[in-house]
Image 1 (cartoon, rainbow, N blue to C red):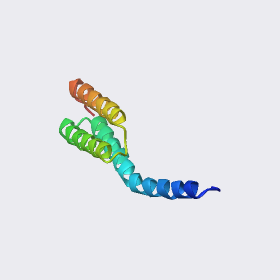
Image 2 (cartoon, one colour; image 1 turned 45 degrees about the vertical axis):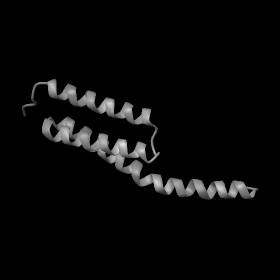
Image 3 (cartoon, rainbow, N blue to C red; image 1 turned 90 degrees about the vertical axis):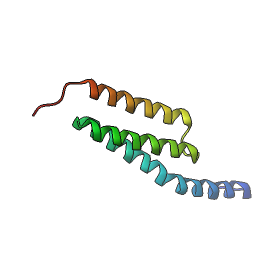
Length: 94
């Protein structure tokens, strides 16, 4: 347990920030998961839309200070790379 007033306040502040950031982080993870699943199915139109939505969520998280801009840029780059590779691949026939 914290001993000083400032440490107690720091605990309160960090808890408030955690609660505010949690749904934003969760939304980002969900959007990325949906984009990856859409890319895996091979439907390029749906995958493109999901990837754009995920990039938008990442940008919003950066603007709110939840994610570092380089972290978001790295995640967007990886998603776009997967999308581009999937669009170049021959269509999956079942």
